[in-house]
Each structure stands twice: as structure tokens, then as C-alpha cells.
Amino acid sequence: MTLHYNSKKLDFLIKNNVSFAIFRLPSATAPQFVMQSGGESELIHDYEHLSGKNGFVIAPFRISEGTPIIMIRPDCTDLDEVKLTDSSTSERIEKEKICNIDRNGYTKLYHKFYKPLSDKTLKKIVLSRSKTISKNRGFSPGEAFYRAMEKYKHSYVYLVNTPISGTWLGSTPEMLLSGSQNVWQTVALAGTRYPNKCIVSWDDKNLREQHLVTSYILNQLATFKITPEINGPYTTRAANLAHLRTDLVFQLPETNNLGKLIKSLHPTPAVSGLPKEEAYRYIEEHEGYNRKYYTGFLGMIDLDNETNIYVNLRCMEIGKSLLTLFAGSGLVLSSTAKDEWKETEQKLKTMASIVN
Image 1: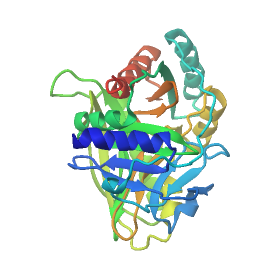
Image 2: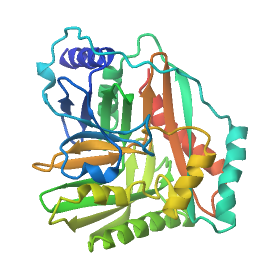
Image 3: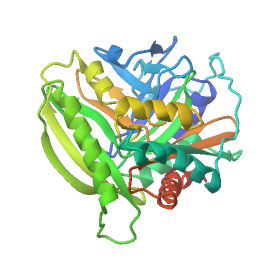
């Protein structure tokens, strides 16, 4: 009964376009809630400007006028305090459109993305796609959040809404940055298998992907004179998938430059490619659609207590009549179009399985 009532509250907040986020940390038993009571959320146009901020952040893959970084002020942190009384918050109006790509279209795009790998311009690049489906009349974002929370116990599960970003729901396995006081952690998550048995074997393609991401993060941390403790790579599971993960734990005596550190890490090669700027530009010019907040990051920045920021993977954007699901995969020289298509199909199932 309580979960059903809480779901109704979350749906109510979305209907009234209130800025809020509810999220559950991996392996935690209960979600956390933050809501802005009034006024417009703070919009930020440079990752570095996150330094010194406190609140729930949702950041895009690429900052633009339509997709700024958004900071939700935590005026209310208890969902029980939310009352079901209509507000006069303005409704976000956006034209919805179906943006799907079939396997043939994906294969053509794959070959375009493979070209800079074959001519050695890039070492890795991430090709993503979206899949739009009709939203059932009875679909409840609140209920879907609690279904995801129950189903994906070892992932970061969230539901967030703001007038600027719209409504997003996700279950992501990839931490960008987490810590409290002076002990912090990030991870390199790259390489994907969809095993039907306990033992997972890793081929050269996936091992190389993992190595590229880990090396990138180590180099970025080195610019801050940070030498982390390294644990991995090891196999970790998220939904029906297995990934290679390396943990990097380090001391961060000063958090004054937290925004600068975030900017140096985002986007990691796990969601863009290498070299970073060249891959970033290639995706922007050739992928053919706007990722918006997919492969951005989100989470609570709380410098007085604990900060937990996650890369926005395995997610969907919830519109008035449509649901848009997102998935991507990392391409290296040994990749094949058949395998990468299959990987994105598997990743799309994470969100598709909680829709109905």
C-alpha cells in the first residue's frame, strides 16, 4: 500500500512538473528523495562550475542551450512530506517524435563509425541509438521506478523530473565519482557480455576496451597529481549483462576543484571514445540524433556528507505519449556490426522489461 501511494505521489509531481529526484544507491535497501519546493532550478553551463555546489545534478552528454546542467535544490528530502495538492507549475511542452533505426540503418552507421578506427584516427568510439515506443495509457513512472529498484538491486536506480530536462528513469551500473571527506572513488566500466552461465570469459576486444578506459582515467587523475589504488579488472553484473570493472580509490584533500575533476573525467571513453575530443566531435557530427541526458551523469553532490554521481546509462526519457530508450556500445578495431547490434539489443531490454 505504501509503495502504491508513493508511486502516486511521484506521478503527481511529474504531472505538476515539479523538480525532484528519487534514487536508490547500489545494494541499498531504501531510496533517497530530493525536491525543490519552488523557483527555477539552477542552470549551469560549464562542468567546472559544479565546484562548491550542493544538490542533485543532472548533466547532459553535451551542454547546449536546450540541455544545460541542472541542479535541483534539496528543499525537501522526505517523500512523506509531499502533499497531493495541485500546483500551478508550468507544463513542459515538447514535440515528440519517433526516432528509430533498423538493423540495416544501424549497419550503415556502424561502418561510418568504424572508418576512423580502421584509418587509426581513433582508438575507440561509442555508437549509440535510441528506440521509441508508445507509452501505454496506464503507464506509471512511479511504479516503474519501484519495479526497477526491486529488479536491479546492484545498480543505481533513479527517477528524475525537471521542467527543462523532462522525465528520465534509469538503472545504471557505472559510477563516475563517489566519495566523502577526502576518500573518493571512480570506476572504469567497459566490456560487455550477456552470459547464460556463472563463468564469464573475456575476449581481446573487451579486454582492450577495458584497458583503454582505465588508462584514460589514470592519465586524467595524474593531471591532479592523484595516484589511486587499483582493484581489477573483475567481472560485475548488471541486469542480464556482465561487464569488466576496475575500481580506482584515491585521496582528495581538497574538494574545491570537484567540478574540474568531473570535467576531466566526463565523458569517459566508456561513453565517447579515444582520443576524447576527436571522438566527441565525431559522435556529435555523425551519430544522427541528440543524446540529451543519456550518457551524461546524475546524482547527489553533498560535500558535507556523501557525493554519488553516476553515468546515465540504461535509461529512458518519458514523454507524454512516447518512451525513448537508449543504448550504446564501444567500437574498437576488432568489433563487428553484428555483435554491436546484438549488444545494444540486450542493453535496451533493461528498461523495456520494466515498462509493462
